[in-house]
Image (cartoon, rainbow, N blue to C red; front, side):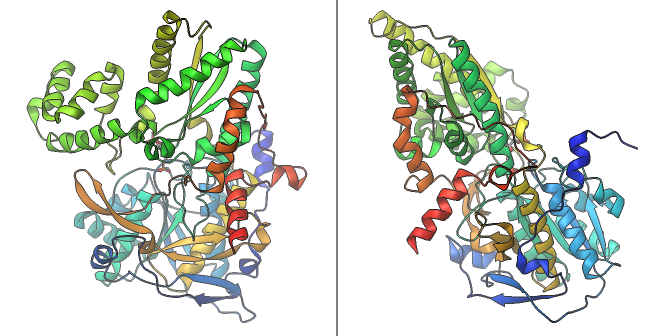
Length: 559
Ligand code: FBP
């Protein structure tokens, strides 16, 4: 018997809430179809690439009084990409729905992410296994991975593995890249008459898999609450000791939803938003000047301390660096099989890159500190993304702000003390126990994924909406994956991918920061959210994020 903490024991007993439309039971559902759909962009190319799964309608479920028995089904499930709190509950919801539909149904879990379905590494879930993971964080029930499912060989192997196990439905739990995989696999299975459905579930702490139909990806709620607790604790420390500037980088590979949500929950002195940097075409120097100016003004007020939140993906949004990285990505793709580059020492590599980039990009690359150059040359992930979690932007900014302050000191414009601490909060929040919201949302997404399978759909993302209302009023259904796709350059070539949702600068969430940040910079209005609460009054335990509250309130106001 595994030893469990008191909280582990209590959380295993938590019964997640389902929307009323699903709570009547998996065999008592009706499905309503909406209008045919189009992809968000590049419709002609996406339609051509997804001939069999393009343009399907959005669907919603409701409870029906008729009971419809289900035939026997075997289903496979994959956890894909970065961990996000609640993944285990998606599997638990899927398992419960499938067993409720027919106790003879089987659920297989592919091990280690998408490579599990290719290589035939799997387990069969049992009551005992599922019951020991309910409402827990992490993806350790079957593990995860970032293999990109895209080649004919991978699809053929997956088909064989599914056929051998009698699997007729696969659920892929992942972010934008992993659900792109789901869309490709769904299309391939239909094209090859495989009779295997594929359904996706929206996961990522980054919160950038969202659109008009998907209000939020799971994990964002718990991860932001965890980071907000940590940032709140640091705010209190800074305000007590009054001697450090804390530069805190927060996860979120591209979008700054995490940074924005944490800022609203804690009200720090500086919050950088990548999307604003890009829209206003702010150079690295202008960002540094903005930060140094706040540090200097606070020093004049006798406050040689403060907190700055820095988005993980910032570097890719600074126009001159973004242009350089895009050129660098193509260059690295070209050099992929070049032995003289691969075997070269670091300085020679820098020189090769410098000479291959155009003169503007070459200048930018050369101007960066060695540490950042090294980090930019590291391997891309299998989806072609720069691994921004390994780029120490917080250190780069500390170094540059310090240099700027020294210049200001010489000019008599600054007379303070800039003593710093840097932090990176990412892995600290990705496997936390899911909040009640994520526990309920994830369980509902998994349960609903089986409903989509039961109604014969493929190439859909499980969707649960109306999330700022109590769970009983949530609306369950499905959205065609192709509806969210567009064409983007990856590894030097244009590929179909699910479009990432970035922070909208005219949206209510950013507006709230914009209206308050000048005050928060100088008058310390810090908030201390404390840790996630699982038991107690609903006003403390079931609260949704500021982002969801503000976005849904503004949608309602617009109706
Ligand atoms: P997903 O998009 O797969 O959900 O992962 C998001 C993320 O947590 C990013 O915030 C971060 O940049 C990245 O994963 C880190 O990846 P890794 O786990 O490979 O270090």
